[in-house]
Image (cartoon, rainbow, N blue to C red; front, side, top):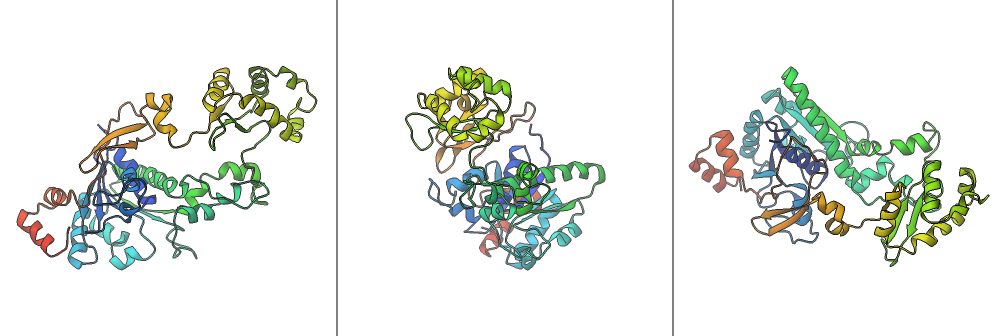
Length: 400
């Protein structure tokens, strides 16, 4: 049984910010019905990353849409709009992340849906939110990260701002929307009322900026700095053999005990009494020299060896995982991060599971749906449509 079994979600999302929200809800057991355009679907289906796009979608699409059902409705047709609205009373939540103005043109905003279903939880993701001078601006993950400040604290201190690699602007927003919908659903159990949730991707990124704000901006009076990989020495990234682009180990030393342990593990006890490194301020002032002293040890080991030696001794560290390490690392293999999922067109595909492991919520992963795969099923279950009615809707192009 899934933790959110009973929650029903109409999913009108695309690409990643919205789909990662409904993905999280589906992973937790919600019944998520994805509403897509006939013959086209979520444009994320056509983002080619490793698997060619088709009616089943790309690898990008597969990674954000497992455990969902797909129906196709032409919402630009008045009959299609009415069909969608007739489904609204059957669902607890509606989520969308289309560009500014799209929902308004379709006339399916919160005011319309809440009039039909006062219990509807309406989640809206926009780059800059639904109000304010920038609310009409379009956005993607990288735009949101720039707007949220993430670029400004990433990169070398004397270099330009840099884009972080992970998609915090998209998936970070999606997870926050999923949390908000879950909270609203719990509140609805008490009050019977739904609500409107307005989430800005820009503001969602600031959720991940609070440490930089607290440690570097002095209550907003100056910009938090870029520090690259180095924090207080000897916290830094160190090279390992065979010296490929990701053959590094990150070592983080926070306490005196960790510093003592590091020196012992790398068999350099004399560093403890070296006046250049005896105190934190000295280590900071002589950071480049200290880095080289430690790098002499890390260069003798692979990144995996360095992590094992340091980690077992109690020094916080990790080797630099690249995306192939998800499949080969023995720790992640034991925890089954990568799941094998059967797909009707592609055979077995391998996808990353939900990060949280819940002892009382068991929801097996199911492959992302084919475009419109569940149209008939949903129309029969929720609207009691006959085969003849569905055939007529399909003939008229209302559904795919």
